[in-house]
Amino acid sequence: MHTTSFKQFLEENYSKEGALKVVQIIQKNPARMEELMECFFDKDLRTCQRAAWPAGMIADYEPQLIIPYLEKMLLNLEAPQHDAVVRNTFRTLQNMDIPEEVEGLAFEKAFEFLFNPQNAIAIRVFAMSVCGNIALKYPELKHELIPVIEEQIPYGSAGFKNRGAKVLKLLNGV
Image 1 (cartoon, rainbow, N blue to C red):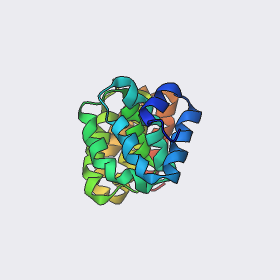
Image 2 (image 1 turned 30 degrees about the horizontal axis):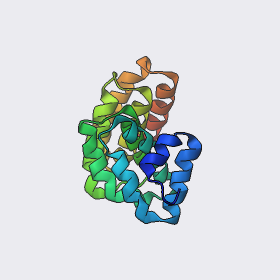
Image 3 (image 1 turned 90 degrees about the vertical axis):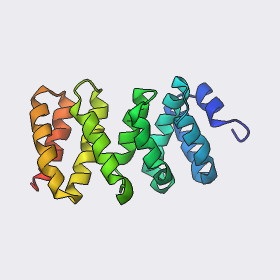
Image 4 (image 1 turned 45 degrees about the vertical axis):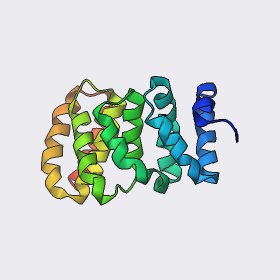
C-alpha cells in the first residue's frame, strides 16, 4: 500500500477492512490525511463515497486530524456528491468537540438535514446528535431544536425514535 494511492486502494478494497487499513496508514503517517480528504472532496461519485467511510472513522481514532477539514466538509454539504458523504460528515461531528469557529455552521447544516424527512434516517439521526450536542452548550438553541424532534418522533423509524428520546432527555436535563 505504500506506493498505492488511497483512490486506487479504495477502488480495489471497498470494505470495512479496507477503510480500517486506510485509518491505520494515516495513524502512522498523518501527512497522508490530506490525500484521503482530496478523495473525500473528489467530484467522482465512487471516490468520494469510498473515502467517506475512513474519513468518518478518523474522527473516532484521531479527531485532531479531521479538524482542519471540518469547515470545508460542512460547506461541501451544499452540494454533496453522495449520501455517504453527508452521513459520514455528521457521523464525524456527533462524537467530537466541534471547534467554536464552526459550531454555528455545523448546527445550521445539521438542523437543515434533520428537518428534512426526505433525508435518509442515518443522516437525520447523526444530524440530530450534532444539533443536540451543540444545543447543550448554547441553551437558547434548545427552544428551536426540541419542538422539531418532538414533532418528528411519531413518524420516525425505531432508530430515529430511540435517538430522539435520548437527545430530548439530554436537552431536558433528565
